[in-house]
Length: 193
Image (cartoon, rainbow, N blue to C red; front, side, top):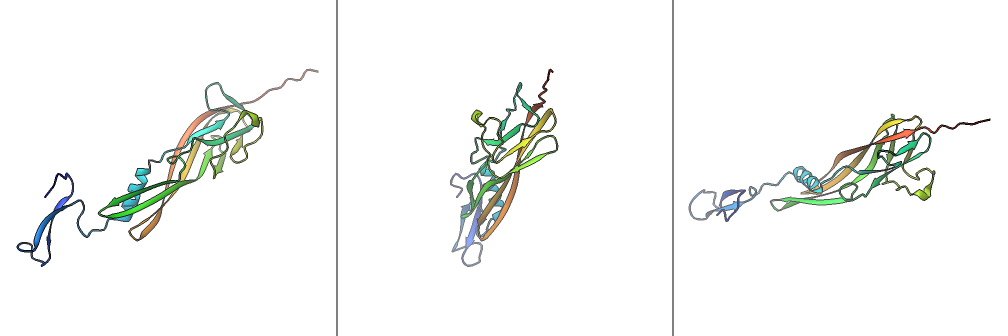
């Protein structure tokens, strides 16, 4: 009856209501017959299958040793190499006992905490900086520091995941965070007269 299965249970079925005798039989099943799985549990399993993670931070000036930005100059912020796991859309289906729930999620915004008390909320992945942009400001996701210092920049991505199945639907919200350290200096000028 187990037929090589390592999970599930053996159940007895009887058409007459009598637990033994003619018309009753035993069978294996992964889940109890007639039991409808909780759609919220399947929705959470579908979200787990998405393997969501924090965005990779793109930033100009680069958050690397030796790289220094300047007070007052534009800071560019973007999501580097966005994919289904860091930005979406991402769709997965979880099933049990012949029932299925499908979930689809995507990032609705990234909130950038700039380390000096300022924040920037962006609903797009931002624009990657190129040298040809010079000292222009980012068209969609940027910032300016007013004081020199070393700052931890944190990007928090907010996911909205809609799910439906087994006659139910709902929304699951999740957040993921990544951070980098950036140094901002101050340009001093000397005027001789």
